[in-house]
Length: 148
Image (cartoon, rainbow, N blue to C red; front, side):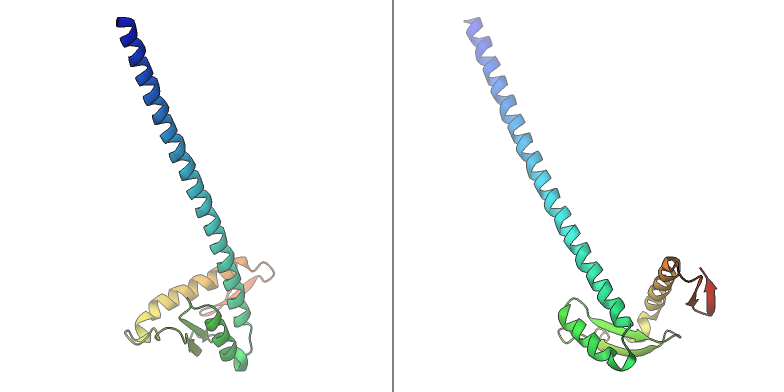
């Protein structure tokens, strides 16, 4: 009788371990599948953002008279963009186009209230351009030419 009890206890323990290991294995497989999907989505998002960045850089190279039409086309293709601005060398807005699909962003706040963020973004972009421009030894920054 004691032998049968020990055998039955051993079977229950072995069966419990088997169920626990199976659940752990399934959870691991689910986690790996989720991570694979997340990596794929991150890669696709990165590709889309790089393509958008190239389109924005191409827009910056447009002549001033064709810029508004090209900006409108870009805003229609990318509904997540809300506003595009073209700035002159003094960082003043030379032209601006709002998305036809969303309310203009400066109805609730004045444009001047976001100038600090704009200046920081422009300075950061200038800094990245200056560091990445290996062909030129200097770049145009606020206040004149600065060595990179």
